[in-house]
Length: 493
Image (cartoon, rainbow, N blue to C red; front, top):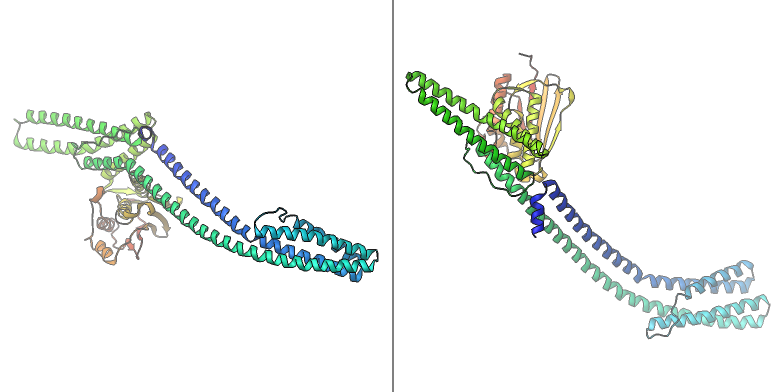
């Protein structure tokens, strides 16, 4: 147990997932091999049940051919009939070699022994008959043939009895094997269900253990983004990427707090020095200081995230560095572009960062497909337009089905502009919900740590920017939602 704890504490997320997945696959493989082997064994036993009856049928058929060729040779004395006799008699000898030759208490095996002994006598008598015919000894081959025919009838009767008893025994064995196969099916189904439940439980526990600290960290980051710098960073004892991110974030937050204290102390000292100045100048200075503080905090957060990214890069934590860098880019873009002008490629880059951050948060459950041709260019457009559409698809579309959720971003070139389609396979929307969005009464901005920009805000800004009302269309029928955005061509400036 201690080794397992040390393993999960000291190894990376990728290593943990790889080991757990390998263990699950090995368990599934072993169960499947067991079921496969047992099934093949049962099938082979079922096939072998009636193989004895097939052998007895071949025995009867070959015996009849031997008798027919003897009769044909006696009547025609042809070389073809003689060749057929020797060939069929040899086949019959090969078949009776497989019959029992020992004295046992089993009635079926004793029947086989009797058939084998009578068959040997029959073949010897048949050879005498053929040789007598070839020597033209009419009296001898007639007597031999009579004995041979009598033996032939006895053998057929014994073979018939053997076939009946063997079929009766095989039927009982077949019923037993069928019942055993049913039990095997129940066992296989039970094993599959147990392995499935066990794998799901292990996967859920592992994901929860790895994702829970990241969820707590994201909640802490959300509170920091809202201005609460006194929040306590959750403690993580692991040395994986999450532990590195948490410790780096804690150090960054401590630096921010210290910096804020220094800034506030400096501002208070300067304010005290200005107390004797004119009242209007004092009010003006206070407004300037508040404005400066409001600008410093988010930019210091960006710079600190970049510093954390550089530190993670120096420590070879590339995934952590990429995550911090994308978080910094995302926050910077949110502050700089909300309500302002941007470009198509910048907006698509923001969506890429947003999906990346969500996939880190939700362990890569969101499938994101982007189809952007190379010839669409990079036209100007209002800032923070595409990200709210994608955010709405995630939050209200696939939030409850992350493992199956698909977000698709498509850009298509039209003659008079560009068509951008944001679609999902989520729960869909009702006509009433769509109507409320068009009317601007369904915004749910600011929930769940979002950017605070609802679809009503997006529609209003598009209308003001392009001076048109029909630029955003929503389609949803039962399952999935498709938002179509049209960007008309506009001249530069």
